[in-house]
Each structure stands twice: as structure tokens, then as C-alpha cells.
Length: 152
Picture 1 (cartoon, rainbow, N blue to C red):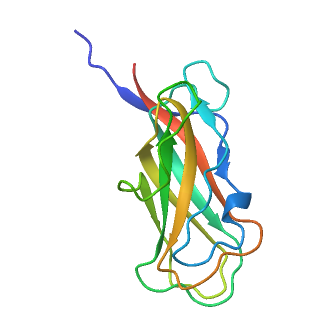
Picture 2: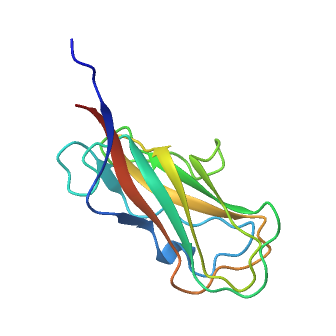
């Protein structure tokens, strides 16, 4: 019997799941939930992939983020086909914690790999945790690049 090789396959297109929701987000504040996305097989952006690389682009800002600060991101799941979603972030642990460096006057771009993402409909929501700085009025985003494992 031949050995199976496992490959990690990335979806071809990255998708921004939070953009304007992050504009001027103060420290210790949460965004509104973003646009709904459908992570089902044969959909253009996610194709049912179970994982994603999650990248936070933090546009230029004033000040220096505090040590140990982060952007918390939740994927709010719908179990009824996109009609209703989980309550707002904070009712459970975040799906991904993106650390923010103590770098004055950014910008910063940070990626966390192999984060589980929901199957079916979901919306993203984020919280600016302990940075001590307000995000820029534009240019911030959270982007997903879905991936999966395949045996060959």
C-alpha cells in the first residue's frame, strides 16, 4: 500500500471580512458584526475550507500600542442558513487572537495561520484589546485566506 502525502491547499482568493467596521475603533471597544459570508462547498470565496490564515492590517496610527495588546476576532455562526447569528462577541472565547506589536505609529500587518473557520454562514466581529490606541479612520482590515488539507 502506498503512503499518503498530506498537502495544505490554499484557496486562490483572500477575502476581507472586516474593513470599515474597524475604522476609528477605540481601545477596549468592539466592532459591529461584519458582512455575512457562506463557507459552503462550491462557494466562490471559502469553498467549505475548514481553516484560514487570518491577517490583520493595522493602518498608520498615533502612539504606541501597549505590551500584550491584541485584536480579538470572533466568527459569529448562524445555524439557520443566515437568518440569525450568535450574540455579539464576548459571550465566549475569541476564535483568533492577533497580537499587536509595541511599534509606534505603525502600520502593522500580522498573520495567524491555520485558524478554524465555521462551515456555513458566519459574520466576523473584533475587539481592540488593551492597545491604548485608537485605530486609524481608514485602511484597517481583517482578511481570511481559506485553506484545507488534502491527501494525495
